[in-house]
Structures are given as structure tokens and as C-alpha cells.
Image (cartoon, rainbow, N blue to C red; front, top):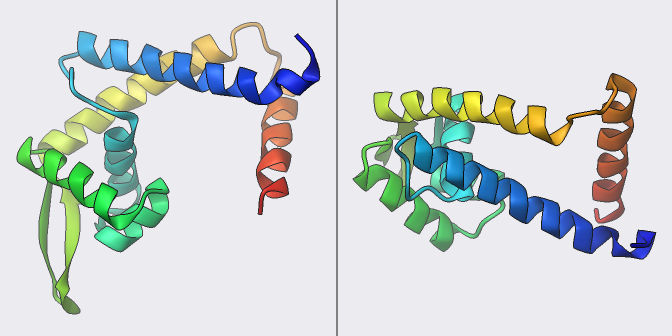
Length: 141
């Protein structure tokens, strides 16, 4: 493998980490979770309440895709929505207790994932890797 295979390698790592999380979520009783669902719940744990537009921006999805994801999470009791007092055309989304419980599970799985991901890395190597990824991200802005 040469350095020109980096994007393919990143894509493969993305896929196997997603598979890792999907399998671990199934083991913990969350069989139908996509990473976008978890990302919405994470964003709400950080921000407490968000509009659909804010969520779409944070999870890097369009509003229609975000709406579908939010409807599923709402139907399953992980989140709830209310009309935005500032703009009746918009909804504000909040975590429910079930959503907060999921985030605790996700936090535990994240620690397990990172432990596997960085196995054998020194702290210096972790920082170097992270900084390289940040540089790549900046190259696309």
C-alpha cells in the first residue's frame, strides 16, 4: 500500500469503526441505530435544545434528511420536539430521559472504540495523528 491509498484507507477505517459501533449497540439493545442517530443525540447532550436547522448543520445533513432521522428518534422516545416560541414554523428538539440514557451508553462505547482505535499509540503519536487529520480538514475549507 502506498500513501496515495490514504483516502481508501480512511474510508475503510470509517466503515470498520461504524461496524464496530453498530455491533456494540446491538449487544446493548439498540439494534436499529445509525451513526447519524447517535450524532443527533450527542449534539443534544452538548446543546440541550436545538432547532432542526441547527441540528442539520451540526450533523452535516440536509434538513429533509435530518427531519427523517429526528422523526424516528422521536417515535422511539429518545427526543421530543416543541414549537419554537420565537418562530412557530420551526421546532425545538430536546433529549428525553431515554435519550440521556442512550448517551451514557454511547459514552461508554466511545471509550471502548477509542481504546481499540489508538491501541499501541503513544500520546505523542495520537496528537500527531489528530493534527494531521485537522490539517487535511483545513485543506478542504
